[in-house]
Length: 226
Image (tube, rainbow, N blue to C red):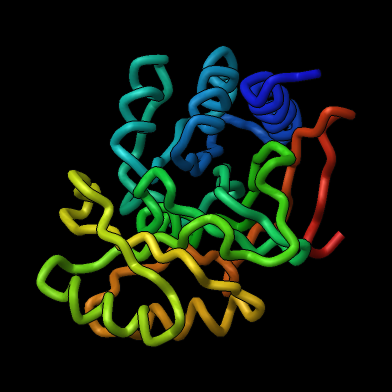
């Protein structure tokens, strides 16, 4: 039986192989954050001469790419890009996701918004019928933390401040457990509209276009609009 690390490596390798035919001298990729993305970056690096560079959702990923010789561009220099590649903490049947376990959810949403298509790379442990088993990360402006927490509690969640953690944007994260998210897009819009919320970790209004999911039987492919 494959370990979770082996499953992650398999899907990272599969994502690189999927992307190779689309690479070219002017291509810029969007790259996310997390342990599976770390493996994707490592697998992509040997092909760095086949594309222009990448833009990233976190300092962690940017540093890793620079160390491997991949040019990292500021997103403000990038009007569009064909692909954004990132992991997820949960994915449902409609390819809506919970993200933000690593704390980069807002920048992930921003970079993904510039890409034409979002490729989500996960192992099979991330597949769920209903989102919410994984606590939903909500990035908040520090002065609004308690006000936002009260609103989240009124929605039926239990918000807990992520201790000793500050996002790359200088903000804090409330991890909200106890939610059963049966209408992800509506819940995303509702939480994002709470004053003081920078962004929540629901990716449903703009979910994944393609999910590559590593299983014991191989890497499976799910498309939003096949």
